[in-house]
Amino acid sequence: MRAAWMLATWFGCGLARWAPGTMGTLAAIPLYLIASRFGRPGTAIAAAAVTGVGIWAAGVVARRIHRKDPQVVVVDEVAGFLVTMLGVSGSSWSAVALGFGVFRILDTTKPWPIRRFEALPGGWGIVLDDVAAGVAGALAIGIVGATWGFP
Image (cartoon, rainbow, N blue to C red):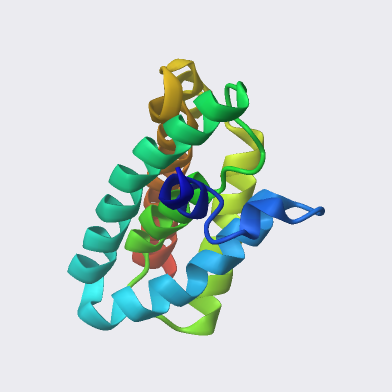
């Protein structure tokens, strides 16, 4: 239970009183900076690993506190941000800022079809809607990059 709680709250970031999802996304940046040293494959491996353990941890915590998608669970934001960052070609601060902004907008608004993933059971629904937001974010950033050469 302790490991699930630590991962689900992303080492306590989900306990923030103000904007726990934003805090979880901010806390994903160091992991991205480390993973991005190995290029997109490194970021993809980190995203897949966080998604996998996140589904498990989010499900455990949600069942334990009897909530469908508890605010304290922010590992989904970490996974979604990492997926978003697959759309950038480097790890510059401008790319990180763009990825952060795009992901937070998509995560909070959850446009169709992203919101549909919330209906999945347990940790699957908690995490995969953010991963879907990450996919949309990566596509948007990829289009921007292809069109204007940024980031």
